[in-house]
Length: 542
Image (cartoon, rainbow, N blue to C red):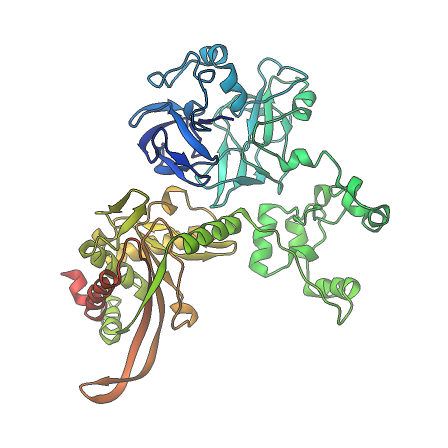
């Protein structure tokens, strides 16, 4: 059966998109996960991935054309399938339709879009159903971190409704409608797939209970909706008796939900992370057992020890379950895809760091100046990449893209995993400028304040574990990059110079390369150029 693909909302503020390039053409086979097109949003040009399999039967928006979100983008189905019914009244040359025309001319398409489908009732006039938005190109589900509005409050267009945790960051979600917040479909801390019921907005006093109850999106499932069928019905009676608190998770002092999620305010969560407190050991005193600021302030290690002693006898096996965050899920998915799709190989080098150490000391003697070895490596890589564009490339099924610009991704560890903010045009920036940018990105990354723009578009990536004392390691390529450089610690050791064994300082680096784009000799030549800059850093200033 043919599937209608609409213009996706690839950012929280996106209202329309422009097709920059089609990666598939009519008649091509499409697999789930294939990149269909590159779409230019209000923030960036992003790859749009197909969630369907079949043959590309129709393209509704040509390259260079712009259309509103949810406009017909493409149709995928079985080869030779008749899609005339879906195209009734619509041609590729007219991708944008007025809402009234779309309703009249495209009844079948309406059934396939992210609209409410109810067999029992109509939506009251003026009522708008707000669904979980797709706030990043790889987002499949979102978690409501915080509601900024509550039921009964007035909402103006442009107001921030909620903070939503995606696979990349926690982002503010802006309302595109005005009215009264009549219903909340997901409580704070709950997760649901993209397009699940998030909220209902409409005229004050409107009864939307039937709308919420019968809400349905074609091709989407909501965890919140599934919770309407109590899990206790599928449990044995004895199990229910042993776990009475799980039937009503919001009325107990235990702050955990049935699926293991802890209900906690953002401030309390941050305080707990800073103090190293295990939230599963904290009793919430807020509304419905929610952990709040005072619970963290009043929590003591003694209280934690007492709880452990009470519930976990000595010698008994024990473990804590931590639900995977959206970021952790995305990291697992993307790195597994990279590791098993890109043929990795590794090049190992060891650089003499004597001159680099002396250079950094002299540079930092300047007033109000402080650069790190990592800043020097970023700059050196950027200059070397300009001379070796093959290493600064990207692989596509039908072509190789050699980038003339150099955007260096710098891996930053955060509590939920790893993010890669991007230093743009790094070859054109001075060492202090690079240092200031990396320091700013790292600080905001740990507070989840980076924007999507700041984490996209890298052409090469650097991962540095030298500050942790790691001498040598390998990394997985951050696709669509063709290579990633792993940087180890500077080690003091005996070295041979001019036939004599003397004290020296060296650093080991390992570059993982995608053999589809970077041959062994190409990677080796890049590292030779990099060696020249690192071992003679004054050349970076020439």
